[in-house]
Image (cartoon, rainbow, N blue to C red):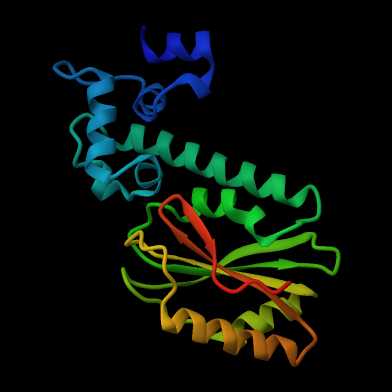
Length: 212
């Protein structure tokens, strides 16, 4: 059964990652069907999140994937991110880990570190969620006072900071912990709460230092 037929029969949840990707790609090449192209992309880049976040220079190394298919993948990725964000904005957030779905859709598979923050009001409603700093494979320069300034601009009461580890290592570094402590102190001086620092490693999201 072809991927599209299987989707119509079983629903998208019944498809493998390669089959879902094949539905998006639609066609292969004269010598390689779309399933082979999809599987090669997954093998080459290391999984579905990495495929959806990879730049064109990496995607195009797979024969049969040009600008048209890359555009479809980018659109699918952005739809996923916006859907996750809209769901978060509908009701108060009970725990910082409710941000996990958006974070994995947004950060998993990136080849560089990104540091950002979610800003919430006193009723835990999402005011904004933003990438603030971009780094290299292993580190990012973060400026705590800019985070504080943005929280004040949005009239936030709580902040959840987050960053990813492109290596996939789900262990916070000493620098991660020091930054968390410093930022918590700066926010506390203004009666703002640092609710948590979340670390994204592959498809995992862990809490570094929750504030109950």
